[in-house]
Amino acid sequence: MAYPTVSKPYGFRPINLIGGQPYAGSTRSMRIASGYAQNIFYGDPVKILRDSTSGLPIDGTVVVQDLSAASLGSVGSVASQPYTIGVFMGCSFTNPYTKQKMFSQYYPANTIADDIQAYVVDDPDALFKVVYVNNVPNYYDDVYSAGGVVPGAVGAQYIGRNLLVAVNPGNTTTGDSLYGVADFYNPLFIVQQPLMPVRVVDVVPETATSAGFVELIVKWNMPGYQVDGYQVTMYWGGGHEYYWPGTTGDAIL
Image (cartoon, rainbow, N blue to C red):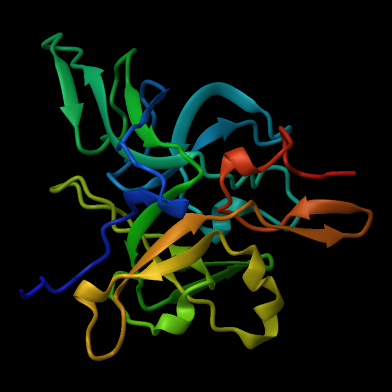
């Protein structure tokens, strides 16, 4: 049987739970604020909206977790708050004009409705299929992230390795995410590799090419941190919200 060529990333697609646990495809309903100004696509990571100064949750709504360097702030910044609560699987809201309930593959930016509900796979044990992409690295204040939509390929030695999330704007025609995962090539910062947001659990042999495996199976890591002087500070984004024991996450003293 011939499998289709993977031509682009498609975000994070839940397929299983770690350890072979039964997976029922369940999601949690989480609010999106009326008028929220960014698109959220099917397969995008999302996070709880937090105060940029205190780091505390504001109103329980979720926003897209872009995981980009510029959004994470400086090392130790409370404003970074990089925890991922889960992966967006669509939304519903009442059309303000027709008063009809609508279900959408993605959240269109600036939607005005009082009942916008995101469907989020928030299980920290969830495993996701995702495309490995050729890295377009970004650098900002000692924080690295990645972008790029060209699929790459890796060997089986990547099982057990941590990777970055490749951040890309989604497709408004299909509603699908274009997030992928990418490697980190700077050998001077290899010590930071354990702080990357996702861990490779397995590879997908069905879509492998002669160059290697294009699709990987990953899970969210515990949020990364580094020792910075007298405190332990969040260093960069990506770990799962439920794995972090604090409420602001800027320090454990």
